[in-house]
Amino acid sequence: MTDTSGAPRPHSGESHRGIGSKLNWLRAGVLGANDGIVSVAGLVVGVAGATSDRSAIVVAGVAGLVAGALSMAGGEYVSVSTQRDTERAMLRLEKQELRTMPEEEERELAGIYEERGLSPELAARVARELTEKDALQAHADAELRIDPNDLTNPWHAAFASMAAFTVGALLPLLAIVFPPTSWRVWTCVAGVVIGLAITGFTSARLGNARAGRAVARNVGVGLLTMLVTYAVGLLFGVSTG
Image (cartoon, rainbow, N blue to C red; front, side):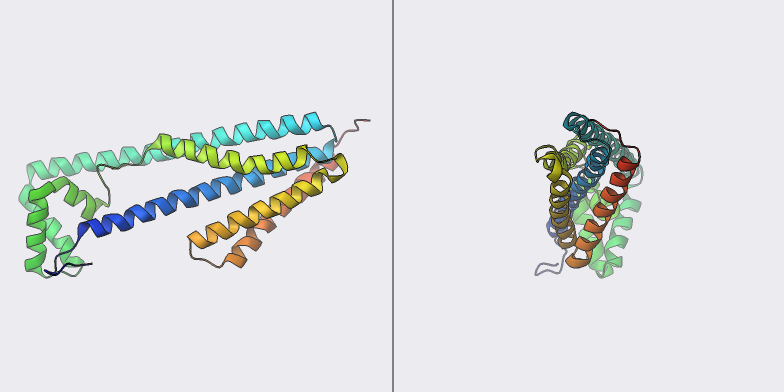
C-alpha cells in the first residue's frame, strides 16, 4: 500500500499484523475449547461406562477439567514466555547494532525496502526518514516483524488458554451429570457433537478452509474418543448395585 508519493504506509502493515494477531488468538481460543470438549468428554464417558455413580463421574470430570485447564495454561505460559524472551533478545541485539553501526543498519533497512519493490532512491529515502523518526521501531517492523511496544504477554496467553479449555470442558461435564442415568451418555454425545461442530466450523472459517470437512473431522475425532473410552470403561467397569 502506498500513498501519493509512492512511499509505503507502515501503519497499514501494522494494522494487518494486528488483525492477524487477533485472528491467531481467536483461533487458539477455539482450539483450546475444542481440546476441553474432547478431553473431558472422553474422560466422563469412560467413567460412565465403568459406573453409574454420579459422584464418581462428577469427581472425574471436575478433576479432568482442572488438570486440563492448568496444563493448558502452564504450557502456553512457558511457550509464550520463551517467545517473549526471544523477541527481547532480538531487540537488544538490534539496539546494539543501531548504536555501534548506524550507517550499515540504515543501508540494511533500505535493502529490505528494495527487496519489497521500491526503487533504490526511494528505499534509501524511506529508510533515512524512518530511522530519523524511530530507528528501533523501523528495524523491528521491517526486519524482525516485531512491535517493540506490543510484545507477546505470557500471562494473557495462559489465562486465555485456561478460560477456553474450561468453557469447552464444561459442556460434556454438564451434559453427562444432570440427565437421568439412562439418558446420560447419549445426552453427552449429542452435546459434544454440537459443540465440536461449532468449533470445527469456526476454526474452518477463521482459516478460510472448507467448513464441511473440518466439522466432519472434528466430530469424527470426538466420537471416536468417546467410543474408545466408553469401551474401556465397560471393560474395567464395576457394579454399583
